[in-house]
Amino acid sequence: MPVIVLQSARVTAAPRNDTASSGDAPLARAGAFIASACERYFPDAFVFALAAVVVVFIAGLLAGERPIRLVMEFGGGFWGLVPFTMQMALVIVGGFVVAGSPPLARLIEWLARRPRTPRGAVAFVAFFAMATSLLSWGLSLVFTGLLVREITRRLQAIDYRAICAAAYLGLGSVWALGLSSSAALLQATRSTIPEKLLPITGVLPLSQTIFLWQSLLMAGVLIAVSVAVAYVSCPAPARARTAAAMGIRFDTPRLEIRPPRTPAEKLENSPILGVAVVLLMVAYLVTQMRDRGFVAALDLNNFNFAFLALGLLLHLRPASFLAAVGRAVPATAGVLIQFPFYAGIFGIISNTAIKTLLADLFVRISTRETFPIVVALYSAVLGLFVPSGGGKWIIEAPYVMAAASAWHVHLGWTVQIYNAAEALPNLINPFWMLPLMGILNVRARDLAGFSILQLMFHVPMVLVLCWILAQTLPYVAPVIP
Image 1 (cartoon, rainbow, N blue to C red):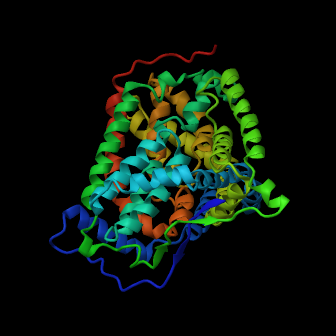
Image 2 (tube, rainbow, N blue to C red):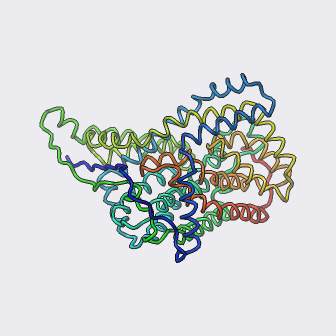
C-alpha cells in the first residue's frame, strides 16, 4: 500500500548570517532587524500564556475583586474550552490527513514548483494564505504550512522566518472577513444568537456582513498591501536566515509499499469500510446543508467532519488514514496544553468586574464619529487576552451593538469592524500560531518579527478603512424574524 511519509527535524543550527546589509530594501532591513530582536526577546508561546494569566489576575485585583474570586474563576474556567481545544486539534489532524494524502501531496508539490525566486515564493505563500483563509482559517493554516515545507525544500535561499510569517498572514489579516467568521455566522442564524442579545442585534444575514461590498473592498486592500509588504521585506538570499541555518530539516516525502499479507492486514487495506463510512458522513453533511442552509451549516464541527470524511476518501484504506493521523498528532501538542490556560483567562475576564469596567469605559469614550475607531481598537486590545473570535464576540456584542444602535451605526458593518480588528492581535499573539508552529517546527519568536512588521501596516489601514467605509452605510434598526 502506498503511504506518503512526511518527516521533519530540528538539528544544530548553523552560524547566523542575518544581519541586514545597507544594500537591502528598507523593509527588508526592518524585517530582519525586528525578526532578530524577536529571536532574542520574544518569549515562547507557553510563556506568553502564563504571563497573560498573571496580567489579567492583577487587573482583577485592581478592579476590586477578591483574590479568592479570581482564583475560583480561573480554575472554574480552565476546562471551559475543552470542546474547542478538541476542535482545534482536529483542525490540525484533519488538515494533515487531507494534505498528506497522495492526491493533495501531488497538488502541493505542483504548487511548490510555481515560485522561482525567494521573494516570489514569500509573496505567493502570503497570497495563498490569505485567499484560503477567506474560505477557512483551518485550511489556510494547515495547507499553507505544508506548502511552505515543500517550497523550502526546493528553494534553499528563502528566509525561513519570512515565509513562515507569510503562511500565518491569513489568521492575522482577513480570515474573519470570510466564510469562517464566527461572529458573522452567529449573527446570521437566529437559533445561535443568545436570547438576551437578539433584541439588541436582530438577525443579520451574511449579505449585511461579509458580503457587503465595503467588506470585500477592505479584504482586497488588506491582501494587496500584505502581499506587497511580504515581497519587499523578504531578505535577499545572501542575508536570509534559512531553514538549514535554523537547524530545521524536512525530509523528502517517500512512498512506502506495504503489501497486505494476513487477513487482518487485508481488511486494514481494503477501501470498502472507509468508502461506506464516507457515504454516511456525506449524507449527514448534505442533510445539514439542506436543513440549515449551506452558509449556516459552515460551523467548526461540520468543517472538521468534512475534512475527516475527505481524508478517509483520499486515503481510501484505513491503514493509510491512521498512519497520516499518527504523523499529525505531534503538531497538536501546543494546542492541547495551552488552550486551558487561555480558557482560565477567559473565565476571569467574562465573570468578574473586569468585563463591566471595560463595557462602561467603552460607552463613555465613544461618539458617533469615533465609534468605528473605538470599536476596532477595543476589539484588538481585548483580543490579546481573549483570543477567541466567537467567544469574544459574545462578551462584546451586548454593549458594542447597543452603542451602535445608539449612535445609528450600521449593525452589520459593526460586526465587520469587529472582525477586521479582531484579527490584528493574532499577528503577535502565539495562541493562533500554535497549529502552524507544530507543522513548521518553529517557535513564536520565529514568526513574530515579520508579523510585527505587517502589524505596523495593518493597524492604520484597518482603522482608516473601518472609519471611512462606515460613512457609506445607513443605519437599519434590528430585524427579528
